[in-house]
Every structure is written in structure tokens, then in C-alpha cells.
Length: 343
Image (spheres, rainbow, N blue to C red):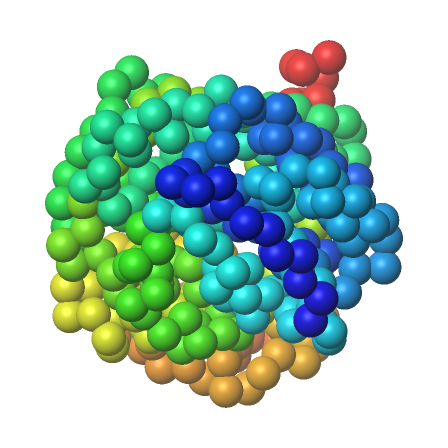
């Protein structure tokens, strides 16, 4: 590992570490980092773990870190993969709170400033949920999905109040997620390697008495590229199954993740699971059998989820192929209509 250490100013407080696991993301990473470093204050840092990128990511990071002590970076000796690189970048952070971000997302500088000022005045807050807009790029152009509107901050304590507020939606999108560093480090993140959702597993394990805030305003924009994991059948299935596996592993460690909560979490992902089994059948994907079995066992007690998944698994392969064709046609039509409305 190549590390670029920097020293913080004497007496300075690092309230937030923005943690970015990077791999061949220079085209978007540059805009994200330059946006944040334009903020003229020193109570935050940006930490990047470069997973042996072959583009301009490391030269750019290395040069910029030499000029601005608020940027710290490490280059892995070997490619760690998504989960391990995610855990690694968090281990390098020195801030009181960790704010994770994908390399192709955008955190606005004024949003970072508002969060820093908020934490200075409310140091008891463990977790912040940020709203986010989505920039969706597709075959017919690009359109924005605006963030939900929140006029005032909402506060609560514990997982039950959180899921009641969010209607059981968990913080799966990276830049909506700030958590106290001590809580993050109290959980063995390696339990969630292979799920692609290690950050949510840590949140669930740490959430028993967590003091949370849903932050007002919209300061985060995420990119959904046309060549992202959503368009890759193998990646889609692995991530969908990983979500269920993460939930089961967290529930086994955290009794405050009740059976009713787990049922509600599963129901929100029901369509994704059935779709994944269709992809698995149609493309004859080679997915880790242990992961497939873990998910199958997890949903078996919940008949309204297990039954449609079982139907897909047992039906002729051609049934999945026909269903996928119909789904793709509907998606293409919706994308075309959205593009025309945005034009």
C-alpha cells in the first residue's frame, strides 16, 4: 500500500471524513473532490482508497494531496474489491463522523458546510440521513429524479423510530450516509463482505440506541450510468442476493432487527429478488451457490416472498426469457417517454 500521510493543524477538529473507495473513476471523481475542496474550511478531510486504478485516478489524487492537506489517499498494492476497499477507506479516516460517497456521486460544498455547522452544534447526533437526487443516464438521454422535499430536520432514537420514519427504507445509497466513527468501528464489517451492502449491515448492528437525524435540504446527487451494475445481469443478481444476505446476517447479530422488520425489509426487495431469479435462469449465471442458498433459506419462512421465487426457479427457462423480454420492452418505453418529457 502507498499512503500519503498528512498532519492536521494543531488544535484542529476533524468533524467529518468523506470516504471514497475509488477504482477507475477519474472522470467523475475529479469533480467531486474539487467541489468539496473549494470549501474554505479545515474541519473535514477527504480520504480516498484507490483500488489499483489504471486510469488517471492515482496521479490526480497524488498531485492534489501534495497541495492540500485536507485530502489523504492510499493506493492498494492489490485490488481489494468493493467490500474490502470500502472497509479499508473507513479504517484510514480520522473524522468524528464518516460520510461515504461513491466516486461518481456529487456532494455539494454548501451541503457539507451545513452538515459541519450542524454537527458542531449537535455533537450528540450519531447518524445523519441525507436526501439525494438521481441523475439517470440512458439510451434516450439523461433525466433527473428529484430528491424528496424535507422542510425541517427530523430526529429520533433507535432503529424502530428510524424505519417508522423511512417506511422501512434503509440507507443503501452511499452519500446519504453519515455515521459516528466509534459506532462504525464497534462492528466487525468483515461479516458483510460479499454482500455489497456492508455499510447497511454496520448501521443495523449499531442502531439499537442510535441518535439519528434526517437532514433537511437536498445536497447530494447520485449518478445512475447506462453501464452501471443495474445493466449487468451478473452484478445485478449478486447485489440483489447480497442485500438479503446482509439483512439476515445483521438480524442474527442484532435482536432489535425484529422479525416484523425483517419481513418489511424483504417485502421492499421482493420484486428485485424475483427478477434476479429470472436473470439467473435466463442467462445461466454462475453465482456463488452458498449465497443463493443463504438467500433461499432466509426467505423460506415468508411465503409471499418465497413462493414467487420458487415458481421462477422451477418453471421452464423459456418462461423467464419471455418475462424478461416483456419487462425490458416496458422499461424502454418508459425511458423514451421520460426523455421526451425532459426535452
